[in-house]
Length: 357
Image (cartoon, rainbow, N blue to C red; front, side, top):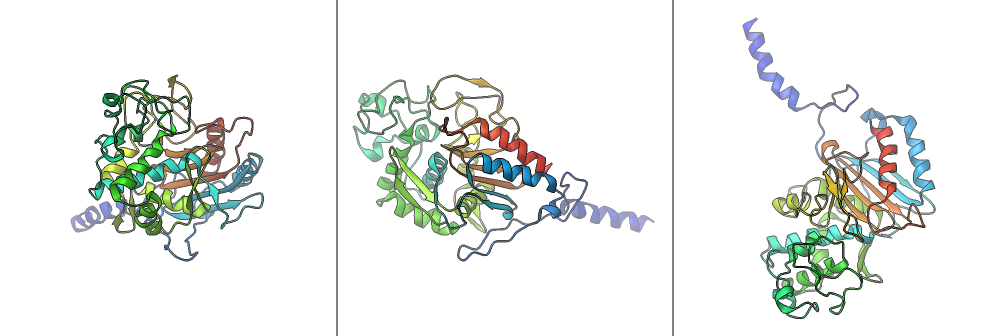
């Protein structure tokens, strides 16, 4: 009997480590993280039935997505595709703009440039771009670092989204005011200056190619916007779920990525380095200085972090569920295209929860 007890004590920790509860009382063997090949169309899938999800809630979710002008939608668990839906003539090869969700691509690329020793996010932007990149007084301009651009705390005038020196006038000292602003795109200029090459060339070599993404940067009306197919957005979501790691390579420094997805300043707790953060005590929104109590998306898991772009372009990352959710499309409410968060997020998560819980 004592030998049997010793044997149980030896194997129980191993058994516990290799199992997980999926919320339905089932404990399948823990899966390894899957990274799709960087070439070709092969991508492992996982069935809804195997996860114990509510299959009767799938159609209401699809109906809602179609009703809200979606073009594509994906759910991945441990990197494997569980749902992949296309609407209104969209297909797996169609490219679509990320809008401001693409800010997180700039974050990752900035982190890579820092880990390569090309720049330091705590150094004045003027060190890389020279004097006069704003119309602020020189002593105020010199206060602005790349970290301030990453955290939306440059203190520059946010009245005009067109990023020109004339529009980038002084409002407050860097680090003292949070304001959603397209001045973030100056990070691309910092990376270009620090690397000695065009931003897109550097981005393609250091990030896009390593993940097997398609896509391109296109000059929008007011800033560069990334366009890609839905699976490429999902690839970046998998990188984000793994805190900058792709297979065995730490593409983006893990410490930097962890900083990116945690509160980056004391003014807006729900904002990291151009990532939106759920589960915080309060949040601010683009276009104002109001602080709202409560979490960003109440129906979403509190550990979720998200890349959010105008017209409801979304990458939701949920570490606790090893899940990535992608939505591309037109604005869910054409009368209110929004810059980032919208009521769509909470309503969509209500539908997702009906499936996964």
